[in-house]
Length: 251
Image (cartoon, rainbow, N blue to C red; front, side, top):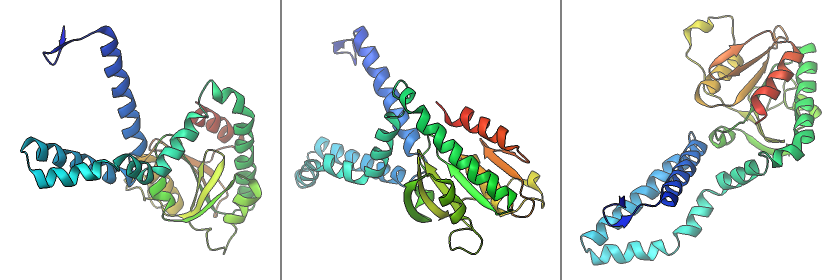
């Protein structure tokens, strides 16, 4: 069997193609929903123009494109720096490496649950978005960046009534509070009715567009809810919430 009619296609070549396809799929999935998507489209267009210029032997355009190509690797790293950093951090947390970090992850869950329970008891409204695989950089850019360790006291302070950030969403990436006061897209689901407020609509809206887990505390009733994969689960017991976080967020 020959590859493109020229070279014989070996078994190792098939494996090579499959691995590259998987890596490209993982990369596209990772940047989906972020500004990096439009930047990537621009880069692809740039390479298409470069190929056409060389094919048609457009010397001036080819010279410009070749000059730019000498720095494209550096430009790529700079443009995608946040995505690359998050990807490397995520790789470091996967199994079998993840086995050594279970204690740290459990501590994050404990801090989130403690904050949610206390805010529910005090009827303090909260909206906590926990990132999984899909990037949330576009959401983070709508708020105030914090980049602090997940801590129950910090979360309760963020959502304390009348503070500047209490109305928006708090975004958690890995073991860090990435940002607060973030704006989430609202769900247009007609089944929600009028009994759910903006926090619940925002939680469901972001869960319809990403694979993130979004926790809601109602300031009117103190009930705990969470949204995941376009579904809203209401009046959740703290123990059920903890088990749900373990099931959804643990690889």
